[in-house]
Image 1: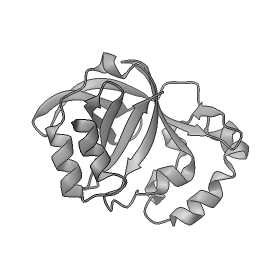
Image 2 (image 1 turned 135 degrees about the horizontal axis):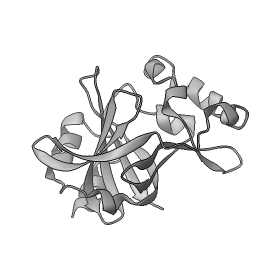
Image 3 (image 1 turned 90 degrees about the horizontal axis):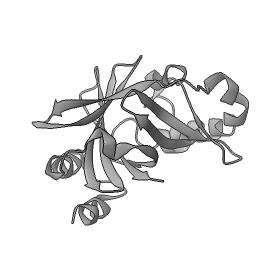
Length: 176
């Protein structure tokens, strides 16, 4: 039923609809997230809507509670690689048109050596969010926490919580 509820909302819905679905979903444990996950946005009118998809964002990889690659990107040749979030200008999100971001995507192969990291840049922790204890990904160097709820065994709904932005950004992760 949860996957049907998510599918009914995609690709865009209101923030209230996304929050209602998020709140209805069960928590997820850290060990349920192990592996590589392909991501997609759930558009809610957030300033980030469209930016990650346009940029070549692929998803996330969880190799353990202390070993998380929070941002995976795919370059033009199809290679998936981990990016250090500090090297991504998240402060510009919402101010740069997604068309310009998409054109910049072609530079990923050139920029890859500067963006790429082999170091893990996040970790998983249990947190209470919206009254439920669930797993969240805490970025090492950014004021961002991604909170997860289970849609099914291979799908989670993520809510990106920014310290200085009141609206959450929603995304879906599917296990590779």
